[in-house]
Structures are given as C-alpha cells and as structure tokens.
Amino acid sequence: MNKKIVITSLLMLALVIDTLAQTTGETVSTDTALLIVSGFVFVVALLVLGVSVVVLRLLRAMVRQELQKKAVEKGVEFVEEESWWSKLMKSTTDAVPVEREETIILDHNYDGIRELDNHLPPWWKWLFYVTIIFAVVYMIGYHVIGNMPLQLEEYQAEVYAANEASKARLANAPAENIDATNVVALTDAVSLQKGKQIYLNNCSQCHKELGEGGIGPNLTDDYWLHGGDISSVFTTIKKGVPEKGMIAWEPLLSPGQMQNVSSYILTLRGTNPPNAKEPQGELYVPEVIEDALDSVNVEEVNEAVDSLQMAASN
Image (tube, rainbow, N blue to C red):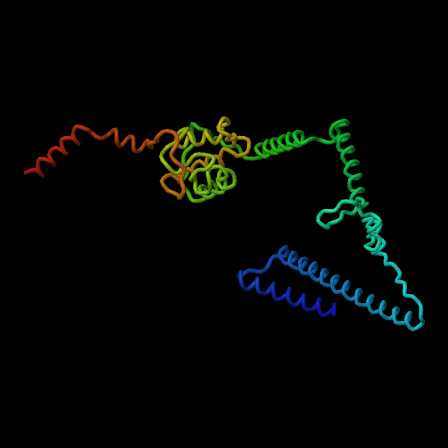
C-alpha cells in the first residue's frame, strides 16, 4: 500500500511540473522544482505515517482479540499489558482513570455538574519551570552581565553597519560631480527607467506607486511644498525633510541615482492618477511658461480683444 502511495504521488508531482511548464511557457527553475518536490515528499511522509498508524492499530486490535479468545478458552481473566504510549501519556498528564474519578470529586454541584480536583499536568508544570529558568537567564544575560545586546543596541549596530556599507559603496563608486547647481532633468528612457525603479523601491511607500500621495504629498499636480524644478526636487531628496519624516537619501543614493529619480518624479506631473491626494504647497509654474507669459504684451492682447468684440457687435 505504501509503495502505491509513493508511486502515485511521484506521478502527480511529474504531472504538476509538466503542467506548470506548459502553462507559463518557461522551464521550471531548480529552486521551484526543489520546493515542489520537498512539499510532495512531506505530504507523502505524512500519508505513510498515517497509514502506518492505522495499520498498527488494526494489528493491535487483532492481537488483542486473539489474546482475549485464548484467555476465554483457558478460563482465565484477560489482562492487557499497558502500552508505552499509555505509560507516557499517564506520566505527562497525571490523569486519573475514569473508574477512579470518585476519589477526586469535589462537593461542588452546579445543576448536576460536578467538579474534579485534577492536578496540573506535569508537562504544563515543567514548561512553567522552563520559562522561569529562561527568564532568569534572560535577565542575567541582558540586564545584569550585559553580554547580550538589547533591541536599541541591535538597532544602533545595524544602523552603524548600514552607514559603513554606504560609505564603502560610495568610496568605491566613480565620482559624480552632480549637485543642486548643475543637475539637469534627464529625458532618456534608460535614466528614467532607473529612476522609476529607485522610486518604487524607496519612495512609493509614502508617495504611492503612481505618485498620487499617501503619507507624503501628491507628486502629480502643480503644487509643491519645496519647489517643483529639478534643482529643488534634487535638493529635497538629497537633504530630506526630517520634520516631516522624510530621511536624507544622500548617504544611501549616489548623485546620479538622485538625478535619475528626480527626473522620473518630474515626469509624473499631470498624469492624474486615481485617488490623488489634495494639493499641498504653492503653485509651481515652469520657467518656460513663465518666460512665455513675460514676453506677452498685455496691452496688445487687450486691444486685439476689443477689436474682436467690436467686429462681432457690427
């Protein structure tokens, strides 16, 4: 029976792998196949264990019936030997047999419901003793001797390690002479794709994936808290806004990466995503539009409008 189960499970496993490969049109990776095989092996092991338990119980029942039959033929009382499992359960639970429950019954009577004076199971008491021992070791290790770091110390150690790794990465990276004075908005697809990936990894948690705003402000409208030109956006990313909870990304991103993500953020303007957050800050008008407005002669425009109105009235 066990062999049939194993063979059937392996055939099902091969069928599942073949179906996945045909459905996705790709070869199943080694890690995925290993996980699937491990899962099936685990399920098969559980099935084999369950079948073994059932078979053993059936064999035990058959042996008990045979022994009872022989005892009746010999005219002696049949006394079943206690199994190791029963002995283990009795030692760990300290349970009183049903036939002896009258020895531990209390005088309490609640509408015919009687209460038994059972002791706490030994396994529960030993578990309680283990927790006490653990608490003592924890207190000595963390608070008396101090050879085990507390949560704050672990956090500070991880922050220090991250800062050191950032310094090493920046030291090994090629120098990029990009700052707020010379940064320009990039428009090539490669740079914007890199900026989008940086945005999704680091900025989308607060500004959402489409820039509609969440904890942070909406990046798709024309209103900005710290300026909407490329230099202002670059500076905001570089220095952060600590009072608003935005960290400075200068230790974590290179100047080129900050330029890429700043350029990508500018492309979000006017995309009008759903559930956009209300505008915050001041209206920002790009310099190109401002220059165009400055070049317009207001008097000439007014004269042209008056001429059109007179012509329409005639």
